[in-house]
Length: 71
Image: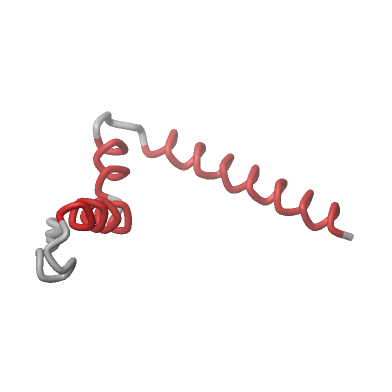
């Protein structure tokens, strides 16, 4: 899956600082760096599923705590 991220000087009206910021923002939006870091090492599918399950459980617990605190 190839993702092409490009920013032209015309988009940022010739401002090179804005060009760099916009490029970084587009890279974050496309999750290029996260995907690279995730695929850097092999992770067994069972380990990945377990990690994601624990993350979802933790997020649900935090959301429940926030709901209880607000009331």
